[in-house]
Structure formats: C-alpha cells, structure tokens
Image (cartoon, rainbow, N blue to C red):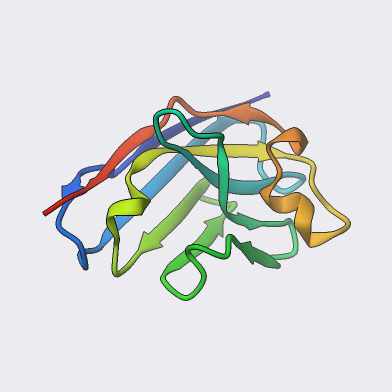
Length: 126
C-alpha cells in the first residue's frame, strides 16, 4: 500500500499560479501510475493529469497547456504546476496511485486508481 498526502492548495486570483505537491510513503512508486484529479461541489471527479511508469503523460482537455505534472520516484513526490488559473479550476485536488497502463485514456479514469490522498483545496476567485 502507498499513503499519499497533498499540499500546496491556496486561494488565488484568475491568471495566478500554484504548485501542488503529493508526498508518498510506504510502497515504492516504480510500479504505479500517478495522477491528479479534482472535484468541485456538485460535480463528478475529473481527471486533471496522469503520468505512467515510463513518464508518458495525459492531460485533461480543460487544463492542457496550462498545467504540468512530474514525478520523482526516488523522492516519492509528484508535482502539479498550475499556470493561468481560472475560476473553473476551483476544486478539491486529489493525488492518486494505481495501475493504469495501456490506452492513455486510462490515466485519467478514477476506476484504475485505488490509492488516494485526502485532497488540497484550490480556490480561484476575483
């Protein structure tokens, strides 16, 4: 099992930037795909960015070009750099680990992840 803890959430104005971090403990990460998901009140969980064990990446359409995901398996840390934040990016952001290889589409599907952090809140408002 792997334990995940997110940090870095905050309140920012539209156009601002934030960097979220996910620190892992327990199992090593070399066999896990890693991802960031988000969920706003009243909405379904949405895949934001995923990165597999080879470093291949999949971004959600709504964040493509603005967000960057990276992983450091030695430090057991996954980072999400978010630029040009918009009001619609407001949500609780969750880090997840699972087995999601094959079609890249799977990197952004919650079904393939069974390890989840508690989340960190990102609020974008003017």
